[in-house]
Length: 296
Ligand SMILES: [Zn+2]
Image 1 (cartoon, rainbow, N blue to C red):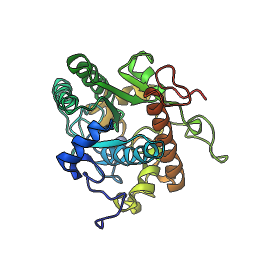
Image 2: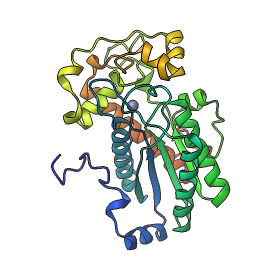
Image 3: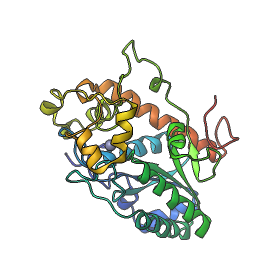
Image 4: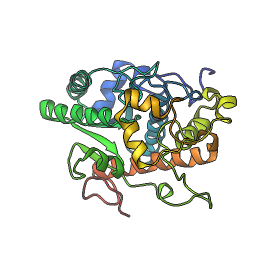
């Protein structure tokens, strides 16, 4: 990747790590909010890089930051966190995880440091679908709020709130709206009949839009769609050897059907939804009540 391209693959692009401490201190004093992505290094099939769950939320945060700036809200991006929890991919190579209590404590310590610097609002995003990873992210936010009083929250969609069994009114959460395209056919194209949840059509589409140089295009185009229904998906979610047996190539979905235009649209929609929810939580939204669901 050439230096200077705005959506390059460098992990520090547009993050706080490119600023001096003077600039960070001034931003905190001026009331800037923080945006922080929590991904993981994990296998993403034979066609996507293991950093996919870091690249995607990082790009999303850059887009959210631009949207917030248009609305007069300054945001800094914290360098991405990428040593998370891997259950589903735990038996594949290049899928590294740590114990949940370690992630929770690292989060709590770092959030305490951000609170000490004077930052009041930290919006935490997940780049990784693993349930235990997301429960741990929630725990890190909860513990940090208790220990240092910072307004940290986990920005997520209603479907994930449900899957984790959380209360959408919990102040540890900033729940955003649902992209209508997730439940309706796009341009007459039927949504996948089978689960498309890991390195499949949806995720591969966004990667082919944002980072085409990192997609093994020759491999992707020849991959056969998986056909997991709800029962097989439940087995897959048990993780480790169950997942590796269920999807030996690592992906779950239809990467051959990926389309960069679909990826561009999904990426833009996900940034808009998050920016709206953040604005609402800060009391600057069109719908300032509630926990951040955009109901208008
Ligand atoms: Zn992923």
